[in-house]
Length: 351
Image 1 (tube, rainbow, N blue to C red):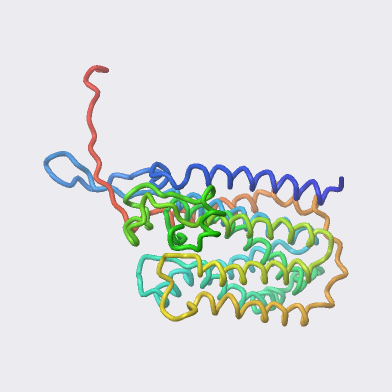
Image 2 (cartoon, rainbow, N blue to C red):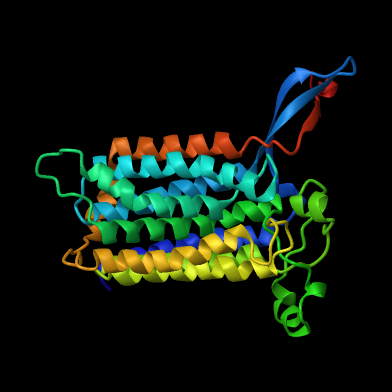
């Protein structure tokens, strides 16, 4: 068994372990609030107003960090400049993170919501420009970032990140599916054993749609399995030099599923027969085909996975991943839609 296969299998074990845990426990009420930080004292009765830190934020931060780490490994396996790779990642994150909120407000008309679909649309449109920009930086004999392999690595990292990030949606109870009662009989029978039943009044599915305690289509789990599976396949193809296949298959499968899966969702996705998110997803497929045609000649590269893994031992890379994790957790982990009131007391019997 070669190094490429061993790496993909190890990644498979890590992914499956996380997904199984998430599907089993995260729909429960216990797995929404991670901690509550007291702020100001509320009244003479001794209660404190608090800010909730959420599992949504922690799981989202984990997904971002995992995606960026995989991007670093894949591109470093080609012996590319880490300066250019980090700069490109910074450009994409600087645009995509705020775009997730801006586009959601535009489409859904809500101030405190996020959209991965909108962020992905922006990211894929600006990625070729970002590659051209960082390639203009003089770094001696370091080769420029090749268009197609770099886009393939970005697409694979995105698929893994969104797949793992769907665990955050399960914890928060957002991006939820229709009830089984709304589905055709064959579908409700097929999905009955695997359906999600969310508990807790603070879950979005409860306060937005009143579906607490009702079996619903496990759309988050279906997306997580598909996207992570595509990411693993894409990683295998990438490490074997099949960059065009890795890129086109990853983009096509994830975006077609995004468009199709919205038909099984019950949360508000904006107006129209097809939502803006569905149009964005479908538009990316021909864009990806065009980019493959443009960069199809850049195939003469031989990735070395062990060389790629070595980058994770670098101090600057580890600090970058940790910094991103903290930034994402602070951005998404402080709940804006829920609050808490805390009471503290002394255990007199322990004095």
